Length: 272
Image (tube, rainbow, N blue to C red; front, side, top):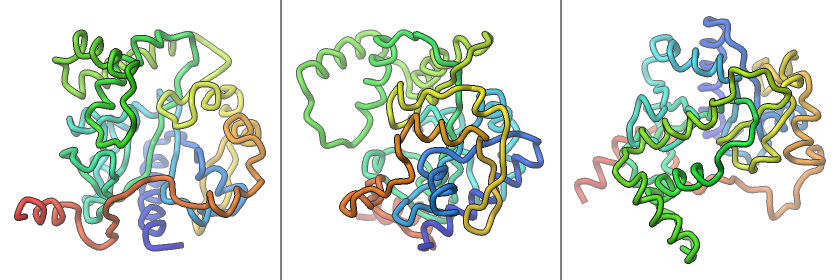
């Protein structure tokens, strides 16, 4: 492991400790789940850890976890930090630095982190409304992409409807869409905040009903018993290594420092 991965593993262990204390279920997810199965630890070139929780356990964790976490760990959500734009949570190590390019100007905790994603029922939601809400999030990012005419029109409409709302209010409206059908029994769930799109982030709830324990580096972690179908839904042949040129981290970072707090970098920027 490199120094970044070691810090992320420390955060994961603390997350697991708190989940065990609160008797909440979690699952390794995304590339971290591939890492469990294919490498028994990190994918060598990976730069983060992903876990997921069913919405009920996720909400319980958000309510109760912070007082139980070590002092230097911050549970980051759009409720605990208004400048944060995600509809998923992060646990940040405030004594470290991981400043991502897209959010480098956001006034938030920029410590090294792990991601915690909620799983909700999959249904035919209002895609147009969600896209307009997303425009309010995207416009806060520092992104180098071509702003097409179609995007500009969407942003104009979005500004007319939602332009006066705060980031937290926008995220709250998005969560209302994501959780609208959670009181109905369904056979499929989805990680709406996932990176791979609607179809690849959709899974059978039955695959998460039972769990098994597996090795991840020097810690035993929980994965869904139906991990094989979950991974195939998202990645296809997940045991096949990608081409060498694609074996690289996928987060574009400005600064990574495992020994210095992000606050020191912010202070240095202010002095300049």
